[in-house]
Amino acid sequence: MLRRLKSSITRGHALGPLEMELLEALRRRGDATVRELLDGAAVQAAYTTVMTTLDRLYKKGLLERALDGRAFRYRSRETEEEYNRNTVAASLQNLLRSGDPALPVSFLVDTVTEHDAALLDELARAVFRKRRALRKKEAR
Image 1: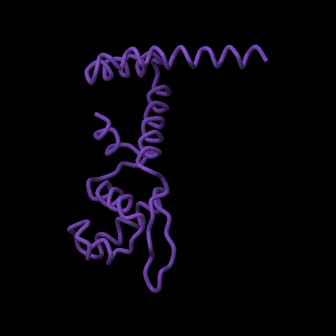
Image 2: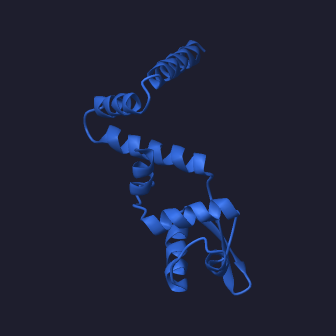
Image 3: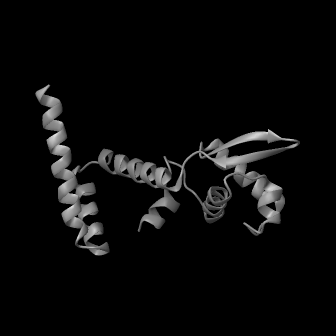
């Protein structure tokens, strides 16, 4: 489910399979040029296809880049964990704006239950911790 969500929405930008593959390759390597990605067999595509795709990821704000000779050296702006957190947060924000505020809560509970019913206890603990923190903040 998370993989489908990750591949479909990133802060309003749809990501395709090659974009996801390049992001993962850059996270593994740390940084790379187009040539390094192709020479290291991180991805199987034409040079210009990889170059264009990396440029799109840069314009979407997912990559940093710096000149390295005549080429750009690319690096992911976020760790995979940060990316996952931001992607899920953006998707939940979209759901919350879509009308019924109970819809994302119901979706979350159903999805957690399908994955691992024991996570419902962790969800309840997280809600409890958040309520306690909000009460402390209000008491100040």
